[in-house]
Length: 240
Ligand code: SF4
Image (cartoon, rainbow, N blue to C red):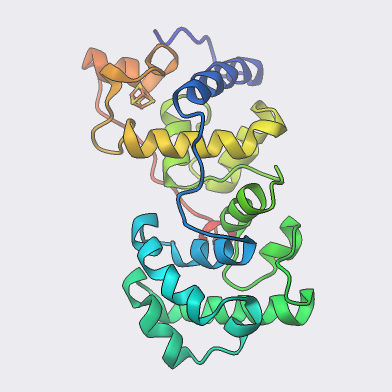
């Protein structure tokens, strides 16, 4: 257990390969859990999901997309009509501004089509790397980066894949140790594992298939230490 020696890049790369293989066996069909039919819907849903849950957002988006079916419709939205539709997601005033701003930029700069590059996506209002990675990986099928949310942050730390707390730095480290073709699927599987097994306050280490490769799990099972997860310190560009 916890047999990994050291934290060198080759050691972390080897650990990441084993962890990735096991997660692929455990969660072969892991996918983004925000309901969507295209890149526009996934982008809007991801912007809405900040500080909320996918389950909650999935109750909101059917009515939202019925009223605003494409970027052009959303670009012309009246905030007073949009806000009640997204109220339950929290921070609805800021999110309404981001959604309308995003849609206007998509219409004005990209002809109403969601752009498919990291630079263009992160230039849109309300869109930082995490959101861009969700859209690129899941809706546009491009492995440009690794989604680093609260679950990926926690598990990457517990599994000894990073000592960083900043999501942007965690992403850089994961990109160094994982093959590019695995970036999107790896993040989905880690998020599923984080939601179902490696919970923040009560990880089910005894029944976790990653235990032999998990330094934190070994410590928790031995009762030799308290759960320790570094609090993420999101940079400005990593908030959504
Ligand atoms: S062994 Fe425990 S801490 Fe490690 S990934 Fe599994 S549930 Fe999380």
